[in-house]
Amino acid sequence: MARPLVAHINLSALRHNYRLARQLHGGRALAVVKANAYGHGAVPCAQALSDEADGFAVACIEEALQLRQAGITAPILLLEGIFSPDELPLVSVHDLWLVVHHELQYQWLAAYHTDYRFTVWLKMNSGMNRVGFFPADYAEKYHQLTALPQVKKVVLMTHFARADEPDSSASAEQLARFQAICAQLPAERSACNSAAVLGVPAAHGDWARPGIMLYGSNPFEQTLENTAALQPVMSLRSEVIAVRDLPAGEPIGYGARFVTDAPTRVGVVACGYADGYPRVVSTGTPVWVAGQRSRIIGRVSMDMLTIDLTPVPQAQVGSAVELWGEHININEIAAAAGTISYELLCNVKRARFVWQA
Ligand SMILES: *Cc1c(COP(=O)(O)O)cnc(C)c1O
Image 1 (cartoon, helix red, strand yellow):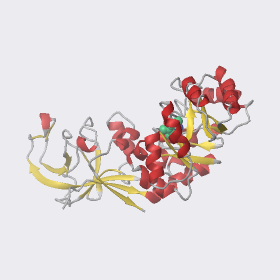
Image 2 (cartoon, rainbow, N blue to C red):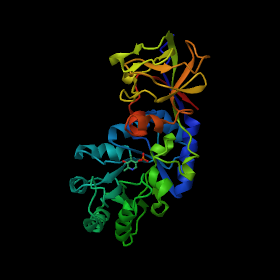
Image 3 (cartoon, rainbow, N blue to C red):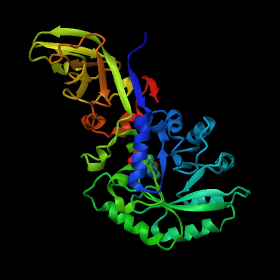
Image 4 (cartoon, protein in one colour):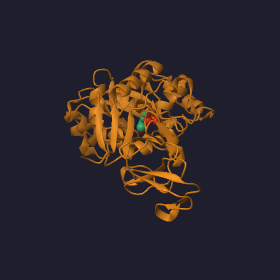
């Protein structure tokens, strides 16, 4: 017997979502599997996509090496490039692609003499003001890079700050700055994260970089026409481990945050904030139990949470619970927690992971 909390990972849904991203965007798509594939398991997810993905993107060399050691031979882009020049030998040995977003990274590369030929993704800061070269400096950096004998190819890239807000003009403004400079540079382009793949068609280019949509989560607050086709990849499932009938007026859990206002049937579920379920959510947050929706009541504890079984008479110890996944949209839980699905997915821990082909 084992604790019943399971993160069930549907790899065919992952493949479906990758194909959708690639088809909506056109061109090629790097599957973003940084942060352990947003908590879904980088190696099994990359292996599931290895037949069809044009390449992968990760945050750092440690993540890339994990994929190479698992036998992934497709291109892998380091989205933040290198953090120190001593990473360059490994970058070349493992044939990784690297972002150059800062002058120091350019200098490290320029000073590294080798017969290897690097593929560089040159990042423009088109308005997010996090990393990248200003538009005014971008073309010069492009020409400096292409002049280096150790550089084989330069891809032009930028990243949107507000692509998940379809009513904002910010992406169009960023795109205009990016395209104005790129028009003079004979190179492939990449601008789109998931939200831009789905919602900023003018930004589609040679390479997409979808992340969250691969995992089936809609990056927008509202459902758009093409987000309805996304299939959730992770279902976080557990079971009812205790049932208790309480009269009206009884407090439940830490801080007595919920007091029954009527006779109430309470279920205890093996899942808590130590598993990555957000403690901050309040009474009323949805949960799926024994085939129907119900709600969390009282505070989420470290290893358990309590749910209302009054409207679910068929529920008993051992009944199946879904915290999010196929029945409960993770965006509902994220909204209840004041965060985004990305953070919830990345935070899942202690659960047993089951990857289903
Ligand atoms: C993480 C990341 C992505 C993927 O973003 P999603 O919103 O998950 O699609 C794309 N590009 C860059 C540079 C990133 O860091």
